[in-house]
Image (cartoon, rainbow, N blue to C red; front, side):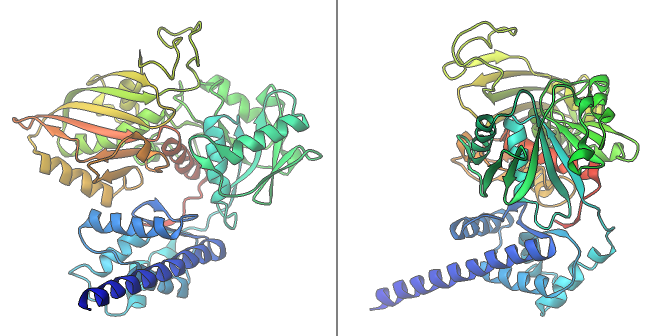
Length: 482
């Protein structure tokens, strides 16, 4: 009988936990759509997650901070957040729950705790929404469109108003573009609705009109004719890479700033979280978001450089194949990339080692790099083989990376993995550009040579870095509590 009672008790707890999770989901949706307050759980996105996802994220959070993070406590704190007046914000419920149960917390009342923790929120500067135009609609362009439309909310930050494409936009082509946005072989179905309006030459995404503009030359477009003004142009075509070419966007009516989703020449190459503050959007009009690999390795290298010092090192990237490669063997302007992408590991070059120095000048000349394209469509790995100035240990390096993943300026950029079983498909859909594999790290006996394994979703994680930088350029970064 005791075993039966114990089992019944387990069933009751699971029912209560799942019921509390449904309230958690409702509260996060209410906060987002009613108050433009986004809730995350140790940087993990919550919107559009189901009950099992939320429970799993709470279990990860508890393991991460080595203290229980209860869904019941999270719900109680969310109720308190919903009861107080706050501006548009991004709040980490995991950190708040952890701090509420910290040893130095003297609060017995949840609401008083929340008010105290978020007291600086109302001092934040009011933000003005920014129109966004996607110039190009390829892999990164469509992921940006998905994320921008999913996170539109009340429209208080970035507003996707138009997409510029080349070639004639027939009814059939418009429907094909809609279909590619609805369903993706790697990232699955878009959690929203996508319809076409041929008379307007537009996509209706989640009920909102997004104009499809046909143009061969950027300077020929009059965005104001579509009700778009002072827009941020996000160029993801790869056709324009230097200052002169990208400046052509600024000659179009209604455009004010440009963001390139690739490494750029003669323009600031930014890894958000590392060096964006060196260039103010009031005085800089053209930005580059660098490459996916640069965004993956730079945050980690900054941590190591700041904490231990880097003498020299080599970076080897094991990268998913890209659209630049051939599906079957054929001519290619690059060596080796002409061979069938899904059948071969292909050695190729990467400029990531040199690109890091643009964000971290102290590493200039210290790093070499190379790349191997492998037969997976998404999900990549960077191996950092570093000689360091100050001696460390395996526990030492893991403690340092865990601290930076939990607090500070790089919490959005670094995810700390605790899994012993992680493989490339597991990291697809991760919004952090760098996933530190704590179980794979190797430290030489002398403590001066370390090998770090950094996973990254070279599409999704990079797209989130682009959006973080876009928010900085558009000056729509909300109050955040991480």
